[in-house]
Length: 289
Image (cartoon, rainbow, N blue to C red; front, top):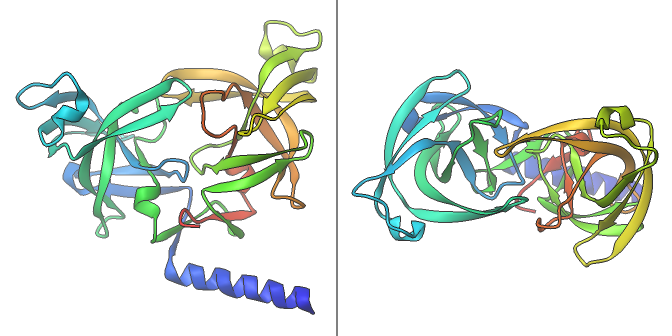
């Protein structure tokens, strides 16, 4: 009986949240009023800020040596959507934003633009970066979602943008970034060794791989797993191929088998990143939780 009551209360609380916030999928067709263009946007709970494809940046009156000293100046830039439509824009620089990724730290200019569904746009800070190598020229981050949207990559339980996730094979808990912008889960892995491995990564599929992982507390574990496939990952720096293994991943006592790509995340704050292949069919993501 208590279990049934608990389930009812969970259902009611989830329903109440859904009534307060609009559910949005992993992608959406959105407009940026100032550009007069429509974008297919990636909804990305892993990103703090919304990001727009921008190139040919030019600071009116000349750029200062330090980017932060250009705050308040007018920036001119060109944007382009996936259809190849372009628009030249001008906007005051509101602030700069420093983003940390596997390549290090990158500082970007931020401007205020009207972003959202056509006819329902609202002002939000947007960072400008060259997304020419990315599939999505507009990325919707937590600053646009917060307080108004729940991201649904299927329609199940609620989870926040950061969660404690367990990987049974490692015996470790990870403070994990929940990232609807990532197709796959990614686990920190170093000292990879393929048994009887060859240079051709695809030829190693089916072989046993050993690697060392580590959580954010510095606790390490050596794992052996079979390579089930390789994955081509594209980002702003180009593309890379990663091995994928199957691991048992989830909230404690709710783990299930899922494919995970392996990469050196030593420079990243989160040693485990949860992508859509784990979320799909199981979770809603609420960036305010």
